[in-house]
Length: 410
Ligand SMILES: C[S@@+](CC[C@H](N)C(=O)[O-])C[C@H]1O[C@@H](n2cnc3c(N)ncnc32)[C@H](O)[C@@H]1O
Image (cartoon, rainbow, N blue to C red; front, side, top):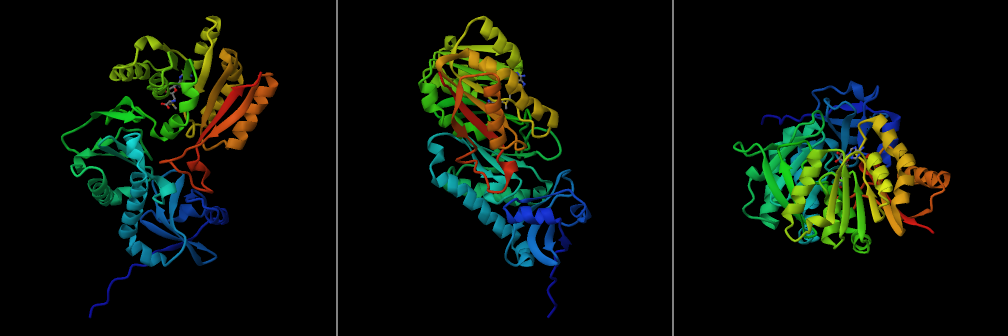
């Protein structure tokens, strides 16, 4: 009998710091003098610790920072590479069923079916957008398994959600190298407008047109936890509003004075389109301001406006160091202005969208500003990613969203 070909996966020593981090749950191997030796042709790599196999990695030679991600830390690694598709299929099913069986669809039809590293499918993020599926790869390795992933997704969706869901409803976006929009898997379609419903509010989502599609689904669980706060408010100011998810949610909860601020007229137009989609909203209850946050705060102060609730969600800066510093430092200038616009029992929710600053540091900085500027604000609650967007212990990059609710302390 002919002997069966048994490929052996190549082993490489990895950096002692990578070993320590993987032991703590961190699933990445970044570029260093060890990982730069990984041969670009290797798809799988066995990471060794003093010649002992330590972890099975999946490799992306094209990624400028994250060279490889952890697939397994125990078991027979050679066997696991042969059984890779099967294990991948199981992980996909587990992630999707966890959300669908929990009844998430009853509240909203935009949610994450797969949330990358936290679902043990590193670099793969999948959103359900009311009948369309957006698959985002943060690692080019997954292009080799694209068809299999799509096939697995369709299987679970046909079984649990919609028997008439087809490959033509899938969108693929590579987020590792370029800033291109998602591509439709329907060869006859270049973009598609979809209406999604989150907590009873309708939003327009545009697939295939821009890098981002019009709603931050990872913020959905934060929005739902603001229900009480918003219901108890008569006036809401939404800074860095984007397409208005927080503003529309406030309008749906009966707030009659909502102001949205964004630098981009394109996003404010989109926000206004979203308001029109919700026929029962009174457009007189909303005002848009196309300007930067700093100017808006100064103008509103001049007008002696006051708000019960102010949301500040500045843009992410995880890819740009300078922006990150600005975004945190901006609070030094903006928090006193925000405080000045609050009613005596008002509160503000300030966000920081970067893994580069921990919640502890963010809170310390906010408390420092409160002390320096003699503001009468106290920390009431903290917000993180949750529900369909879980975080993973030891993986700070995945824990990028931080929100602090500050209440007036008179
Ligand atoms: C992270 S998004 C906000 C997402 C939004 N809170 C949501 O949940 O849908 C950041 C937004 O800030 C806007 N932006 C960036 N710099 C700004 C500035 N200096 N003043 C006002 N808006 C700004 C961008 O146009 C973008 O729409």
